[in-house]
Amino acid sequence: MSTTDNDEFADSLRRLPGGLLGVARGLDKADSAMAWVERWLIVGCIFGMAIASIANVIGRNVFNYSLPFTEEIMQVLQIWLTFIGISYGARAGRHIRVTALVDALPELLRKTVLILAQLITCLLLAYLAYLAYGYVMSLAESKRVMPSLRWPLYILYSVVPAGLALGSVQFFLSVMRNLLSTGRWLSWKSPEVEAEDAEVDDTGI
Image (cartoon, rainbow, N blue to C red; front, side):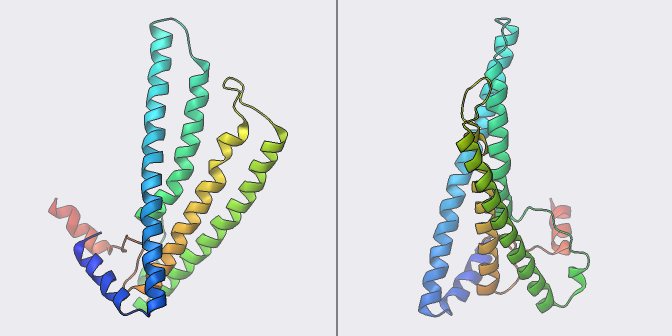
């Protein structure tokens, strides 16, 4: 986020009543903490997948022995990476959007539609997280395990409700940012970039 965006948000916060100002600062700290956790989880998943893949290649080509458990490790890490990426993508404002009709609306309506879309997505992800949590609990009760690692299956899928819940939180933060600040925001720290601005940036590289 640019310095101008930071200044604009700071100015909007100063105009808030004391209670809302405290809420906004709390939300900002929560977003920063989530970003730190997600960043290291994503790095760890990618690093772990690379190590497992290299170990399997070395075992197969050097020792003529394949490591079957590495495939399960990569499967676990890939699923974790995918669902952690839901929240990460929402924070960066990188999820795919269809805005052809919305872009033709007046400014106030565009922001209203954006807030409604974010709110609906927030509620949908929260509901999916609830359903996923029930599924993970059923896996825990069944005591099913992975074939090679013998890890409980619920460990593999526990990231599904967690990732969906974190994504829901991110869209909630997006709604709050749009309510607290001027302009349109795709996430707590990512402003919506006009297509014309993006084209200028691309041609300037």
